[in-house]
Length: 343
Image 1 (cartoon, rainbow, N blue to C red):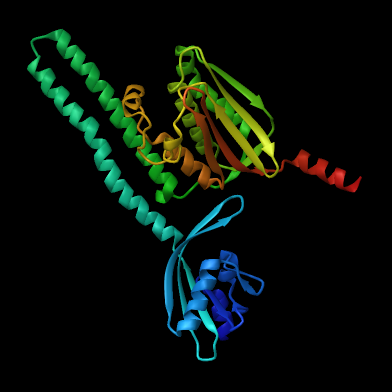
Image 2: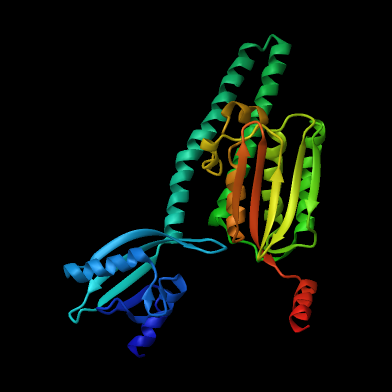
């Protein structure tokens, strides 16, 4: 098999750059990674690595986190090596380390966070059990302690379930085969799941915006993501307020916005609220039964669908969480576009 054919089959990006910084050779992986476009290495950090190797006549290595932009947004962790050759050219090799780094981070965070989070309800259950045993001759006290034990057990059960959900979303299991998902059905199901809790607080749930929008993915996961956003909106809103879900088509994306009239989120917290176990108000989260995993689950579901999630909020003025997902052109819309183009 010719050497150039073998080079094209390699999963590692391989590029040969001449003394004028022009690409003489690039394999398929280099192009698909977005390292090379035409005759140019388009990643400035990699181009600088090539020039340093040529100037020093020594091999250079670096690990980089690349933001390739676009929508859906692409982020990539790579390991790169630039090797100067005798004729003045530089060979550049780039390995995609995104998946291995992601798995490593998941494993590390799981061990660190889970141990801490599970310790709290387990410790509470131990203390409550001891208190109930000490008060065995006082039925009212025993009843009180048993009720608290039940709440802590439910919280622990929810925490474990959400950890399992998050593990699956992060790659612990194969993702479901994508299908066309009608967002009207997703919104209705999520609203139904939230309605009983909202009614108990007198919170009105409102649905607005466009209808007939379609995305590609898992209906079950999207319902879970939207339900988590609605649960948070209701939990952190005062009685008698309103929570709204709005759908809009914007260019090639569908935007789902959940807006509440709740307590809002300080700007300093907004960059961290999608982290696992991060709580803006730990005391209030305990009171509402929150585990600190709901928004992390939303982020991973949206990411698995090639989208992004953002938040606007102001303390005392409520919050708006916006999910952007790649849109699917439905058949009627496609026919209308074709008719418009030919008329």
